[in-house]
Length: 359
Ligand code: GLY
Image 1 (spheres, rainbow, N blue to C red):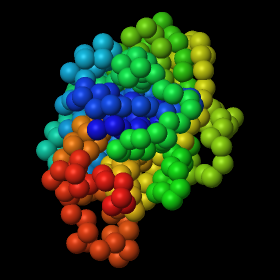
Image 2: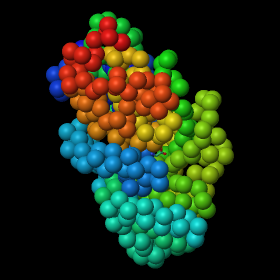
Image 3: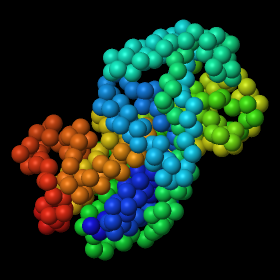
Image 4: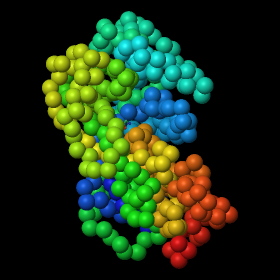
């Protein structure tokens, strides 16, 4: 197949790389490769700490993609930071959040032990003495998304900055928080501000949790870098960095990991996460166009889900396979705008799913 991929963030590039490895002809178009949400992302591979009560489909996807990450990272020559994640509660109310999360994980078969503050500090001495408690998620790791994007870009041969609208069989749209019309309503921008710093005393593992009710994470890199994130704000303007956002992140991070006081400031940036109406990704045929595949709406989970997204998109293009929970047409279907009988998942994508004239 001749495939045009619009968008060279981690999702577009992982799809392009998978399709290339499967022998397809792939062109990638992006005026600023890797400069969107992938540039800001901390790179947590932590489905268990991201799960909320309404998001069990996300947990299923996240756990499946997490299984793929070790060989995926090895294949790209990018190291994973494999020291686990500590889910931390600073005050009593914050610990209740941790307890709720642990209880939820228990219902889906992920067993996690709760630790008191002192026990948590024994395994992570950089934590504050004021910490109330924590839970260790030993299988939830992290990766540097900028390193992943660079490795993927070198494999797909870079991205063109002039759209090639020449002949291709399928277009994959992976443009993050900004989808072209008529699909722009399927994603909304959820701004995240994120800080980068450097310290000679970083935490051993990702620390994720709540500080006086504010969600926060501190993700260490092997070289002493730390990523501190992230704010979350529904908005309809440019994703700018605000003083209030920076202040909240710094305050929470310094309370949780007091040694960060001595860290040197490196960078702050803001990007929009691509949220969808149900916060699940959009993977499959674009509503109204059978020759266009959406690989979008990965919200807070683009890095974690990238290897799985690549497989799902490539499988869909080759066989028509589709996960109904991710079908971009699900909102139209729920609203009665699409006839369910027409949502047949064709066994052969090449012949029946992607002919331009059946759009
Ligand atoms: N996945 C972390 C975030 O979106 O902030």
